[in-house]
Image (tube, rainbow, N blue to C red; front, side, top):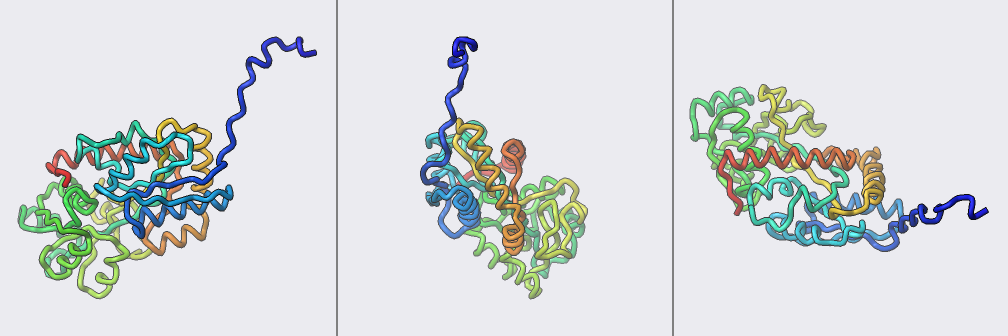
Length: 315
């Protein structure tokens, strides 16, 4: 009898709305063709394959990713607007106090998409054939050894400053207008040290135009398996990798975040995707949303300290 369960109807929760029922948009705060764009498309394809809904990539470059990310932060928290980000997402607050978004407050992390190792390279004229020898040389010549970057506050600049603080040495930063001009200057001997993209730099290492000393990340790379990590080379505690991840606006229902995480992580960990990323010097992500949230907090704290100690200012 209906009367045998008093309050049954009052206690029944409405069913969660179906998801997804329309196309999903991923904001990429950089121009098409870069690594953030590439990984966003892998994530988007995994969702299309799983759910049959179209995923649109919306490139909104500007201000080192801050323009598109600020736009995504204001989107409706319904799972239909996502945001692909990179390492600059966690560095931005330390560089700009007037930032239009709060990385910790305005987003719900979904998952890490991938990490990419850089390599520490030197010009062959520099008499340092190992990380230990470079540290000793830099201590003997404080401020005299130069290192290149693609611009102040960028990933290569941060990698160099982290090296300086970890090794207790002082090198001189020389910013260029992009990583390509910085690499050309390094090959030409205008600067002595670089923390460069492995895929682009590997041919110059193989040809002898540059000498590789170590991988900057926590693990060795399949592209240069003989190259030690910085820790293996004697600099304990140093780990620098560029990384890429996917976020939703804060307030997105946890069940939607969970579904997104599950499908994207499944694709990232598939043998085909793992092999594809390995060929680019990248390692797949696919961690839980909670793990990614903790990773973001750790990155923000680390880079805030590096930026403050080095006196780095945003451009």
